[in-house]
Image (cartoon, rainbow, N blue to C red; front, side, top):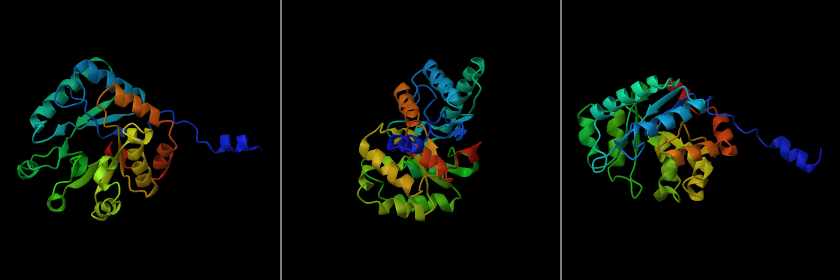
Length: 248
């Protein structure tokens, strides 16, 4: 076999879809309440395509942030009802639930103390950090959450640039039993090659527990579809570590 034959043989086949994941557990598909889908028509277009890409279930996770997106469980669940009704009317074969993506900011502990956090099944709590600097009390907040029984999922750790040159910070979080959710589009280089580089390192160190589309708009969809061509996606799916299907 010649060198080109060997290269062709070793190249993994393009993934057809995301049906092996079954569940997408991070998206912004309730229209008009954050920086995701703006209208119901936008939401339905994205949901229909997610169904075509093999997802059986979507757990959409609107932002809850103290300053910018002052959503409440009531706002989110009311929006979910409207999306479910629209999906039913359009005969799109997909299940939709909702949780939230909580920013760890100065207002978060007030929400925590209300004992009214929106979680993914089995007390999984999706959190995100500021892109500028982590909260100064992050360790203490994580401790309080875990003491209360929450299972913490850190959204898109590959995007926090302040840790790019200090990989030990990721290792410390994993040692604290924090799950990591990688944005699938990071694999395609959607954000930057530097983000892709960190995504690759996290994957190679088998530190990724969940994959999420973080779906916002058609541009995100293009990045999601592009990731199907990436060897890194094959690698992370073959790791045996991805737990999306446990959320079914």
